[in-house]
Structures are given as structure tokens and as C-alpha cells.
Image 1 (cartoon, rainbow, N blue to C red):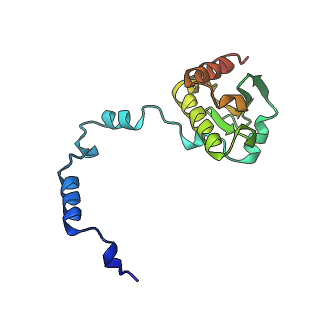
Image 2 (cartoon, helix red, strand yellow):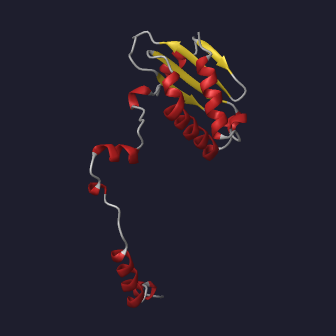
Image 3 (cartoon, rainbow, N blue to C red):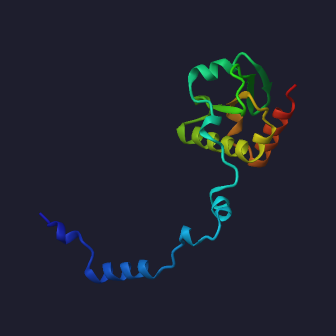
Length: 156
């Protein structure tokens, strides 16, 4: 039976690796001069956690509202009863769209499209649920954004 020491790298290989890591230039966040630079790194537009639908009753309440149908997804919208000041959204991606990595990719792409482009078109005090269809998997991002904006602008 081999000892644990037999599986270690030779000392020369370890020291050269540590030397290379120590000599490599590193990026330091505190070297940035202003908070504006930090915001550019993190992304200028952020969606607050309060702007998302998370619980089943919230999703069910939106089902009673208007439906904006499209070839790649369905958008359900409903005015909130509590009259909140910001628009909230939720995403629904069923197993018909694919396995979990594909569903997660669809959700990430939808979240990013809403964050960057469609959040401006959302009415404050309204809840939205985007229900993805299987055709959304192969859709290029620019088409996804244009479809999303088109559906949101077709509201009454």
C-alpha cells in the first residue's frame, strides 16, 4: 500500500508553481478610483430581489390577467392588488423545454433580456410571468430581446 507522501508532487514542481502564482499580476478591486467603475464591473442595471415573483400564490394571481401570446413564449400580466411601485416578473420553464441545464440556460437568457432591455417597457405596479416554450431553446439572443419587447409594447 502506497503512503500519502508518495502521491505528492516533487518539491521542485511545487515551488515553481507557487513562484508563478506569486509573480502573476493580480487585479485588485480596491485599486479602482470611483464607485462608478465598480458599478460598471458589476453591471449598471440590477434587478432587485423584490422585483421577482417567487411564491406559487403570486404566480397564480397573475394567471387571471391578460395573456400576450407569441411563438416562443407567453407573457401573462396582471395589475397588483397592493399597488406596488415597481414591476415584478417571474419565469416558468417546464420540462417540455428540455433537461435542467437547458431550462436553466433559458431562464438565464430570459433574466438577462429582461434586465438589459425589457425592464424599461414594464409598467410599474404590474406583475409579469414569462412562460417559455420549447422553441425558445435555439433562438438567438437579439431575436429573444426583440420578441420580448414586442410583446411588452403590445399591452393596452
